[in-house]
Amino acid sequence: MLLALPCHAAWAAEQADENEVKAAVIYNLLLFIQWPPQATPAAGFHFCVLDEGALTMALRRHEGKKVLGQTLDIRRSGTTPEELDRCAAVMVEAGSAGLLARLGALARTRALLVIAEGSNAVDRGAMIGLHTDGGRVTFDINYGAMKRSGLAPSSKILKLARILIE
Image 1: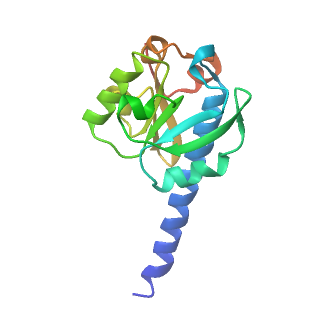
Image 2: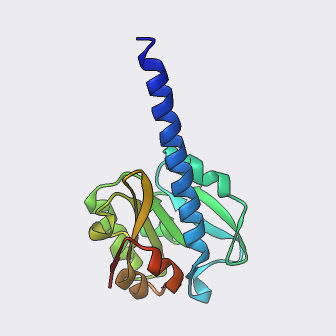
Image 3: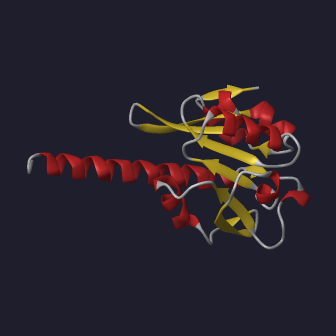
């Protein structure tokens, strides 16, 4: 049993590092996306999360930094349109295809960036899907969904995407 302890500690550290990298990727992606002027309230850049998992905890380390000249505010939210109304972006750590489809449908009616984990997240409704590929954190982008939502990603992040759906 004691022999398994170092392996578990190494695995936990690896997972923490992966979440830190994913959080840094998310923050940097936010810097290269343009929202319509009316989409972000003057009171701050509201990034909504649906649960308090490990990735959310890593992302909270970026709270208070600037996005579009506004302070990044990470807040827990429900999934109704009213609850998401003040959000510029929403992240789903672990969600069903139905949840991502509902968020994707809501994003077609307003500027709301939908980010999710999983290699097929963009096929299920997310605009950005984060995943690990061979030990590296990569992301896919559904460019068409972003455009329909009124979001304009920089060509720099489009070039870095593993998969780009137009």
